[in-house]
Image (cartoon, rainbow, N blue to C red; front, side):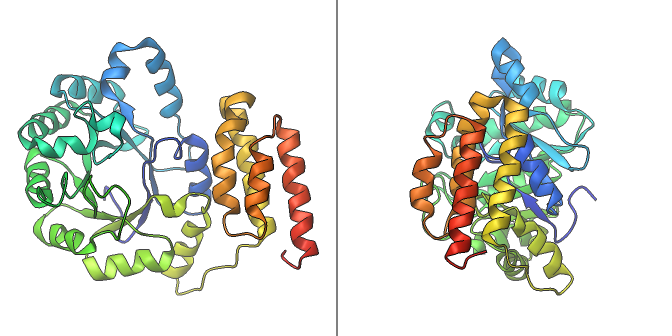
Length: 323
């Protein structure tokens, strides 16, 4: 089966789900992952972007990974699908959900929901030329006055898509308010192909509740997994009827440091250290004194300095009875 029923998938997130973090989440039990989105046009036209895409497409042997592409030109998307659809990926995912201004300003991502005729042309061409099964990730519509997810879902199915992921928000809502799980339920009951639910999963219990309440085929977690790869371990335990394990501050810090070393090894010290700052903030969120530590982390100029800051912080937490 393309997507395992009742599985928990790591969502594609630009600047987050790179090779290193996907590998970490896989080690903790993520059953499937999706790459950061890759520009179809950039891949075909821009030499520098072609080099960047090599890095974006890197996978670890253990992960079951789908490749996500974005674009609103049918020819570019079809050609990119043909070029990028390698056998190490289990699917090629078409982005029709990204709400970022720099993406929608070009008519891509969730802006495709404003022109379903063109989206249909894109999907037909991608399905025709992709050597991999094609999936689609989308939102409910551009805004509350133009909800089109049922029409878009049926269109994707008719074009030959193998599955659809629905983030239960409109583009206008961005990440505010509560995700509309009722929309996920309606889409799941409408389509014959698997529907994956996405939005407001912050724990294994949330994922279980989404599956139960919406009847969707699988669940996808995005922001809830940032700095929290243990969510996938909790999910695996929940499936066995076991409670989640307590994640100690020491485990958070040791995992963050391991992440830093891997990221620097993957992207080099300058980029890796700077990209790690946001990950550190997510790993440490909620711990005593973490706001002050983040200030020090953001000024660290070497891996050794960042490691020293975190080791000292771990000692402070122990001194305050947090281990």
